[in-house]
Length: 128
Figure 1 (spheres, helix red, strand yellow):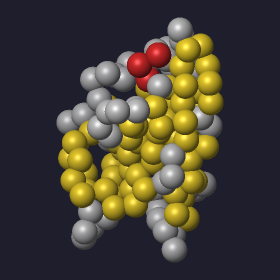
Figure 2 (cartoon, helix red, strand yellow; figure 1 turned 120 degrees about the horizontal axis):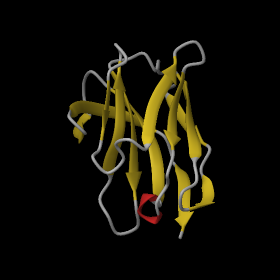
Figure 3 (tube, rainbow, N blue to C red; figure 1 turned 135 degrees about the vertical axis):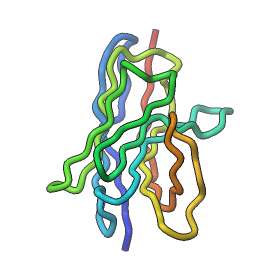
């Protein structure tokens, strides 16, 4: 059964850093597209960062230069390194994996991916 489990969220002050992890089972992180999304209260889900099978990455303008997406194929784990955090980064962060059929298409930076598997999220709170 496909499962994505996020961890690493927490509360930090503005300017701080966090590293999110997404442990995958039943889903390989080396599939076409893996991504991080976030959703703040009262706002729509936003694609934050994506990485595809060849290692190419794409970022939302709001996080470019501050966030880095990466993956460890051997550990089947996806990461999101978040630096220079701002209060507006406060949100629930979700890990997602693409699906060949039946996924919903999202734009993450310049990359369009059909996402079909989702984790339950990890909460990131940034205080000013």
